[in-house]
Image 1 (cartoon, one colour):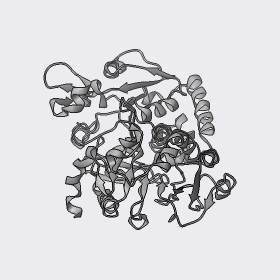
Image 2 (cartoon, rainbow, N blue to C red):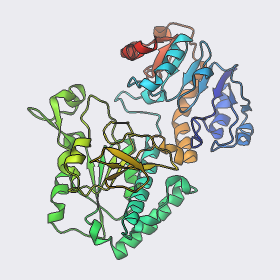
Image 3 (cartoon, one colour):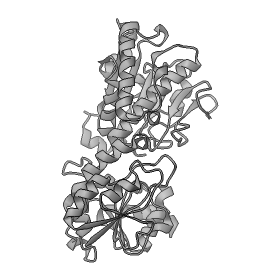
Image 4 (tube, rainbow, N blue to C red):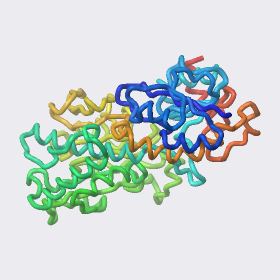
Length: 432
């Protein structure tokens, strides 16, 4: 019998997700897999549901050779030689997770990262991205409503609650649909029209965000139309949506834009995103960002254009500190999700008070929809669980009989970085 463990999530009180739901455990037991699940008082699925599905509930996962989790795992949890499957947040060389990576290597473990399970076109196969987009857009609409309220502007968005305050995604969508009807009938306050939502990115996160915004009376415009919209006829009974792709964000220093060339040689490109920022009301950041790429929003731009912009709220779903949104300087929690960045002083104030732009900066947004996001994630993961559970990890990496999708996601094997991830060695130097 192959024994698989499921670690309880305890990074914070909001983390109620699980990588494998009870229904799928019941199905997978037929494939000669026994499950051991750590008890949890906050998980979206009760311990009793796992028991009914045939899982064992116990604190110790010592008898499991493969352990699944969602978020990062504390150092004292790892055991020698075992295989761990979770979001490690190490592939960018994230400094705060290098001690964890070193521990995994010291104990000669295997690390498989969901983020790197991709198809032949490098598209992620197992992800929470859609739910980050869903929750991120709901929370951004809430933030807009609260910001306008604080400024004395009555607005329909003030009725929107934060995502976690709804009993389900369906309830949240019903609430937004009602607001959509109000906007169609009464229109928006003249002082905030044209209301332009800019969404950077077009992947799974962006699709989730658009799924919410499209409930409202939306008209989609092109990036070039953003700049001229205020000088043309526009409607106060619509919200204008613009989706930015890479070619809208950067220009080549010479020649034509070419997507793969930009990915390979970002130093050959310069940002042109500033020209849109002045006219956006809300910016939702849904892009993958690394320090080799130009930023969407810089502190310098915000300072130089203070008082000239219409930008009220930035929903930084990507949530890289000092990343694509340079003024995102602090990770927030769902019960305290926003701060105001004041460009002239380079200071932040939690909440909605202050002169500047409101920044939504929650890095675990899918946990606000824990049940639905876990069900979707588990559905995608389910087909890979038997091969991971039954793989002989004692053989050499080259002989390890994993599918290409999973093998690509093995960051550490027998305590050593696999060939595709040996670049991480330079980030580990300070941990030796």
